[in-house]
Every structure is written in structure tokens, then in C-alpha cells.
Image (tube, rainbow, N blue to C red):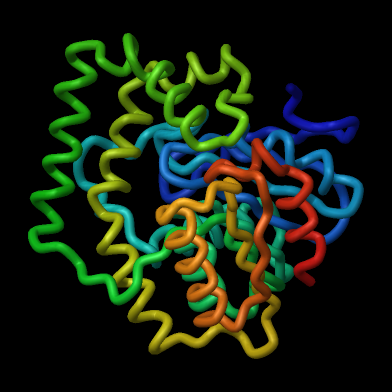
Length: 293
């Protein structure tokens, strides 16, 4: 699997808020930005990108600690927030000189991030695609956010000192991906998985984001009440249907339909597909992005 089709790939490290972030751009045309969920790296979109590059300039980046991006400093940085991630997206686009409105696709947790971006920077959003996005009805933030963030950092540091990421990081990534696809396999390049998931930086980023998950959901819930989406903004909710008529599947699809209704979005399902829709149905993901205009 390659990172792109026949179009040139422009890879760079951009210093955003003092942190070198790995950013890749390729293709030509109106800009679309792809951002992955909890624990994801840029290569999780590899199968989608060739469908897009004949028609779009595609931007991908790794949040701090993921992929090839540098980690945030061990101390002195606030815990992840929806507004902070929206600002990071804006800063990446600005650093690339891409200030025109763009389509944003967010997978899973990153659905929160791109929606927050559209609400906080309405003049910069041309469309949204939530790819099996996270759904949290009426979320409430958990107490002691500072202590939870400290606990996440401490746990990651202790695990790294014991070489847990080096020994088990790639295996954990592989198992998670296999359980998240109907294919039952991780299609990401094995050398990249080893390189990106053997380090403590990815584990620390994952634990910090996970510890703040409900807080970010609650923050977005407030934004939904106070910062409306731009009028007429095209939004698509693309839900994964694994084809199993289990209660878990039906509940997940019902939640996705409710999200689409809340946002006034076009609702689509794609089957058979697991949560890593980009692996099982990259064509459907690309179609949702290209049709959202």
C-alpha cells in the first residue's frame, strides 16, 4: 500500500504552537483536510487518498505524539480540548497558505474536532464529513481534569520506562485495527506501524485524549448551543454498518442517525464496514467527501 497514487506527495514538518507536526499534502483542486480518530496516524487514510487527489488537494496531519509528529512537552501544556484542536487545524491550514474554505473529514473522535472547527471558524469551512464519528448524547465533563491528565501522563511515562510501547505497541495497534474492520486485518504498512507505535509518545497522546474524551464531548455540546454551524453548510454523517443485526450495531446506527438529525446532515451508511471505514470502504469515504460541496 502506498501513501498516494501517482500525484506528488509534499511532506513537511510545520512548527505549530512550538511543536513540529508532520503534514502531507497531495493532489490538486479545492482543499479537503482529513484527520483521524483516537490513536490514528496519517497512513490510516492511505486507501482513501487516491480517490480524492484527481479532484482535491488533500491535507493530512498527525496530532502531537501520533505518526511522525513530535510529542507535546511532558509538562506545561493544557489537556486536549475541542477548541484547541480546532485551532490546531486552523494553524495547519494557515501555515500551508490555505485560507480558503475547505471540506473537513474527521474520523471517530476527530469528528468532534472538525465540527468544533466549523463552529468556531465558520468562514473557513466548506463542508463537513463525520466518518463514523463519536456520539455522546448529553455528555457531562468529569471532575478533576488536571489530575486525570496528570494520571494519563504518569501512566504513559511508567509504561514507557518499562518498555511496554516498544514491546506491545505495534501489537496493540494491530489488534485494535483488526477488531475495527470487517476484513479482520490491519492494512497499514508494517514498518510504519512499528516506527510510530513503539514509542511512548503515541501512548501518551492516546491516554491523554482518552482521559479527556467526555470533557471534549461536553465542550462541543456547549458549542452546539452557542455557536451554530454556518447556514447552508453541507454536512454528511457516514456510518459504518458491519452487516450484523446485533443490538450493538443497531444502537450505533441509531446514534449516528440522531447525530445526522441534530446537525441537519445527509445520513449515509456503508456496509459491510467496521469502525475503520477507511480500510473497509475507502471508496465510500471518498464519495462522501466529494459529494459534500
